[in-house]
Length: 268
Image (cartoon, rainbow, N blue to C red; front, side, top):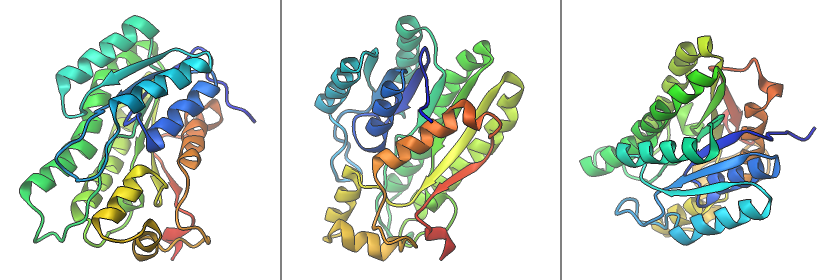
């Protein structure tokens, strides 16, 4: 069954490339207009390639080529003023926000006793606090509409421990807490909240983490994942299809839940 999001608006963070971009394009193909929010510049931590302004603009062009509207919104999920401006612009130009995909995030390796305080703060501030900062600006609009879906992109690390990734795991476990708490708060307003938990995904972050470790993406996948199905990782489009399903009426009674997309990893 093909999902139909005609007349709806999806606000997606971390939209310039990877899972965010794939999800933006999938929603556009299904009829939704897109608000694409991304830092669109290099950050000092972690030391791998982030989305760029060129990628954000090319996403806008691709969405518009599909016949949908798209706002390219550069901004950091730690910057409340930028978030507020982006949400205001979305409401002014697109009229509503029906879906929030809280996707922006970072990852980097470090043993707990060796990581710096700046590394810890960056991980928590981007992955966890950033999700809250974005959602709290969007929630009132969904509440006024009496409808909406918030999908938080957690990880398998939000359901298990991860070696040399304690700050990352802490941020992703925190996303589960946000999901369950927001589901309780927002259910009376007709708003559903879910988290998704992918295994490794074939994205620029995947490549960047491998380069930082002096290894290939295949070696990193075998070392840190160990999927039950014979694949080293899943594709961004797999995540996008999951998000569309959860945002659709076919999942109308799902809220507060965790959707695992792990190629069987957690079964090991």
